[in-house]
Length: 69
Image (cartoon, rainbow, N blue to C red):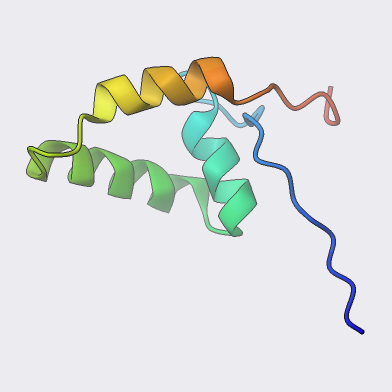
């Protein structure tokens, strides 16, 4: 049986605004800059994706990361 450690989705200390994209990048195992660029591009080019609203909701819902303080 394979045991996997479940990574928690938390806001990152590697933050430009609130750490949401940095936290998503850590959770996905991606580079934070790539996640930030993709998030902005999807927000701009998709009328059905309200990027600012989703970012604000994630900011309020995602807990802070206290492990790296």
